[in-house]
Amino acid sequence: AQRVTQPEKLLSVFKGAPVELKCNYSYSGSPELFWYVQYSRQRLQLLLRHISRESIKGFTADLNKGETSFHLKKPFAQEEDSAMYYCALSGSNYKLTFGKGTLLTVNP
Amino acid sequence: DVKVTQSSRYLVKRTGEKVFLECVQDMDHENMFWYRQDPGLGLRLIYFSYDVKMKEKGDIPEGYSVSREKKERFSLILESASTNQTSMYLCASSRPGMNTEAFFGQGTRLTVV
Image 1 (cartoon, helix red, strand yellow):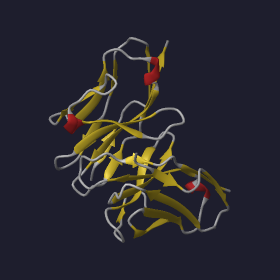
Image 2 (cartoon, chains in turn brown, red):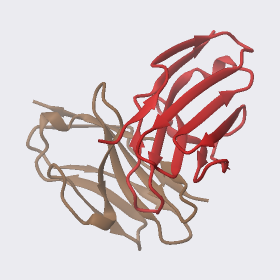
Image 3 (cartoon, chains in turn cyan, blue):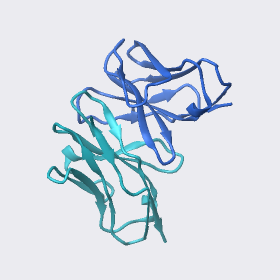
């Protein structure tokens, strides 16, 4: 079975502060990990995927297979980062599983 | 520009009705998914399909069925709607492969009364 855990339902930070959204996963093989984001009144969309190893909108995420984690980080949060963030896992059967999400609020 | 279109933005149905939610994608994607999105529960996978006429149960298939007769269309069916199926339903599509991006529809807010 594959499972994604996001321990924080809500996260509130001030503008300019660092932010880290936690994600842990459970999967017996080698998964593909993603972060998706949903801004207010917009569709859910891909933010980044671990295989790309890229920084999107200042966000990065590193896959730690030893700790089975894929935490999302940004050194300096901006107000426009306020959104719902979902961690997701894709397994070998193409099943795409999401966590429960973390609502990030960046205060001015 | 990839488009995933869900037929209705808002839907109100009565308990016991048979409900059809339609999803169409225009990018020739093999994979299609149906999720329900509830506050505090995130996105839960109902069914997915990796090819025409193929379907796989997700994590919460009870009370639902699906149909995929054409590659571009994936329908979610509530055989007998119940109030606990009131939710936001999201459709998504993607190319084959584990690391491909999923594109989402705008969602259908279903209320069962």
